[in-house]
Image (cartoon, rainbow, N blue to C red; front, side, top):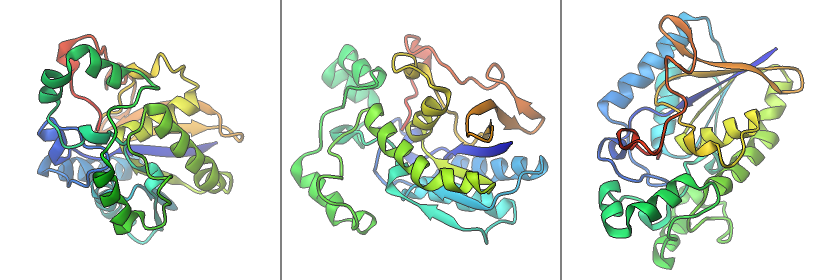
Length: 255
């Protein structure tokens, strides 16, 4: 049996301010730092160990990874970073307050951007797109590879390609892997592993700073998955994995 651990970064400044984040490179809040420390302590307490870590090129995921590994005394292991594990690109919505977006575009339109697996939000301007092209983090990308905006399926395409190309070989060699990434990136990988239909993935939520453990067979097919807490394994009922997007109480969006 093989195991891989997914961890969504801790609370970011834009999570706190209720803003779309996407590829904007914002840092963690104090709560985000503490959440990463707690996740590392929980993994260490329950005997987890890792040979390699994967993360995006965005600091909130990188810092979560660093802090977690520090808590586990594993700062020496390789950490691989890739834009393909970045959050979904929210186009021109990035940085905007989510309540203001509803006021501007209407709740029905915003829900379509949020809930559809295939609909993209409004695209970046060419000027803003050029800023990303000039960012050293994306120096290896061709202009046509760098998105103006992404749907969840766009995010899934790049994340799953990276999974197959880079992460699967490590798992096949029985390496112990942790992936520190983002809500939509991890949703995409869970969707792929569990073969969740497009119309059902909209209700899938990955909580911040909570290790999600997947046990896989020799063919890398899921046997089971669970969240890990101080008390041990936790099922989806104790840590909500699915949310009702029609309930206004559940309006914290992934980003």
